Length: 261
Image (tube, rainbow, N blue to C red):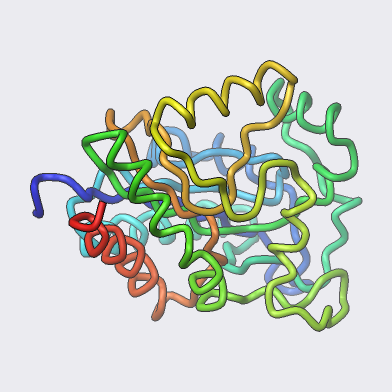
């Protein structure tokens, strides 16, 4: 590994669907109770909607380790979903399911979001891929994030996979990104001169009761890695055949710019 850093952590959000109707089903609580918590432990999580399930790898040294963990977690989630007669699907939006019929997860965090954002939160029925790249030095992480942010539109273009919404062809290759941009603090992040400047910006948002949602690449402290990371939330869901290439691209870009900051 290069300088014992540039470790990887990857999260994916999946749909829970009925195999015959293909409609979304609210079933993530049952998946957790049926063995999700005991088998996958901290690597599986509920999200805002009960028809979504999120998985996250542990710290991985390379893309091969990410592949092995995602393959394992997808298989285990599929097994748990089949126990309820359902299936797991990897796609950025559902082509026809109505967000108004989706159940919200019973958790204080999600009730707060829905109470503050109302239908903007309820309609946020989208699924994505998050790639975390570990950087030892937080100051370097911010400098690298400033460089790589230029490539966010390119990364989105490579992964566009959400042309349908509510049974209609939207005319957009990435309808997901347009749905998500209704949230504050989304889109390409600001450029920060230092890690301290970013912390000050975060503090200002908190003081006015804002949301800390940064869609794109941003340097953040990531609990699992105990160091700064650069996180790319811009990707939509890839086909399995392209997924590892996209993850490797994020890591490769950051390594490329390491000697330029």
